[in-house]
Length: 369
Ligand SMILES: NC(=O)C1=CN([C@@H]2O[C@H](COP(=O)(O)OP(=O)(O)OC[C@H]3O[C@@H](n4cnc5c(N)ncnc54)[C@H](O)[C@@H]3O)[C@@H](O)[C@H]2O)C=CC1
Image (cartoon, rainbow, N blue to C red; front, side):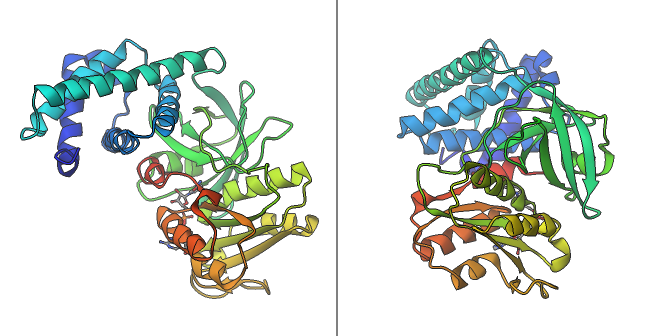
């Protein structure tokens, strides 16, 4: 991996060129623009290599990957073709470390990896569809860039509060992006997402500016482990930045449904007062739940009309309050916030096994664009 990492771009470009030259029929399974796809392949290789000594984490990661590949139409028969081209690309770029021995090691590793993915996909086939179709039934613009999109899946969609899914729009086939569910599972089966149109974001711009009630999108399977630990009575310290408030709101609803009245402290951060697009919903929840406290935090300017508003960065705001030793922490938002937030939470005495957030690598490569 050390020899491959600095030339990752070349390796993945070469790999896809080989794959499409040798197997042109597979090209239709991939999006028109391959930039994000290329990053994804390499991130998957790095993640697998990173956990190579921890069979449990590796199997969980690969199983999730295998199940996730069902929505692309991936079949067991595709894996050998991919494996051959991967070896072709690696052997061409890892020239100084390549030998019969390394080749045999890669073949063994790839065979094991693909078997776990194939088995997980086959198991999943018996219990869940490869994807869900979902009709947009409401589209509410909260700011010119942020929409709350509510959809009705064509069949029951089981998930846990705090999880995310992948979304494909009809306008950009085979381009999938992650979005967290903005509510806990609802009795009416509806799902909603907070989407911010980001520059050059294919899916996010389509969802904010084009999608209207009646349009049909596709959803992949749910994922993510930022879910409430119901085995403890610890309080929840929730830090949500920007649209990262969406899964935090879902967690609050989950605690409310359980009726356990654990203290929940939400720090809701935005660049400015104007960007606190969901503050009214959060404050309404605070009014009905005595165990919930919501503190808006803005990076610039002041929070108007909210006496408990804080000016500054989210991690600093969290440090200013507390103590947090009796709390589990949940972090959601931009990758930079997750990184500095984890440091702040460790610093205030919350051990790492009680800090939950989505994978920063996933947020970076498969972001919300
Ligand atoms: N499950 C998750 O973790 C979710 C993550 N997201 C991510 O959240 C982001 C939302 O984007 P925007 O609304 O434009 O957010 P934004 O850029 O407006 O930032 C939101 C908040 O995070 C703070 N922040 C940003 N970078 C920081 C850093 N390096 N250190 C400390 N604080 C920082 C800002 O000061 C602000 O308070 C996207 O990157 C999206 O991918 C969105 C939904 C769910």
